Amino acid sequence: MSNTAIILGAGSGTRMKSDKNKMLLEISGKTVIERSVEAFLPLREIDEIIVTAREEELDTYISLLDYEKVTFVIGGATRQESVKNAVETVDEADYIIIHDGARPFIKKENILSTLKAAGEYGAAAVGTPVKDTIKVIDENGFVIETPERSTLFAVQTPQVFSLELYKKAMKKAEEDKMNFTDDCQLIEYLGEKVKMVSGSYSNIKITTPDDIALAENIIRSEKL
Image (cartoon, rainbow, N blue to C red; front, side, top):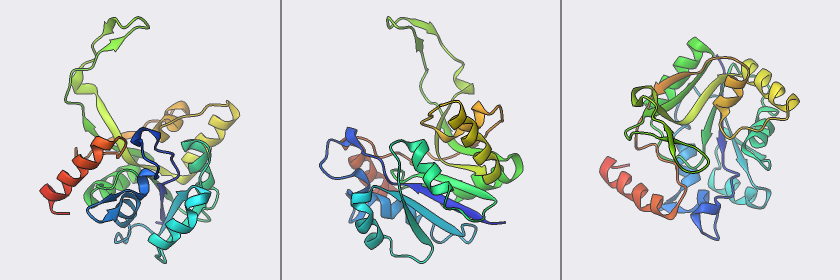
């Protein structure tokens, strides 16, 4: 079985309020994108790693991630386009593992458990049970529904799909002019099911300045 990991590193990161791409911010002496990619490098189950990058940062990424297993593609204007650009370079793979470059603390066991679930069900994603009570509101800000918390998961990445299934879902989304911010949504839109796998609360996404301090705490507490 052949598996290709796609690490998304071409986002703008406007919420970080920094002149620098958040992927290039350092956490304890190592950039976010390095930590994310290096989580996948030792895994023999991963045959290839494709990193999406903005064109103006491509040389920097190549310098930081100088590994035989890693190749690069230019990202698109949206997440969906970036994944498409990467998928179109995959010559041969049974499964693709899509991961946010801004999630530098993904654990080996969570990658492998999600890959195993995808091998059984065709599509799987890692996530965590929601801790808070969630309210659905209307356009005026009034509560209209309180979903049962036990049925709610906060989805993370990696999200793993049969390459054949993902290409089919990608084609339908393009034909219907749909643009999704979550890869599972493509599969759901196709009418297929995605298996949810329990992950770790430390698998945070670096999005705002507060997340950098949280990331430093994770490194100290987990001795990463």
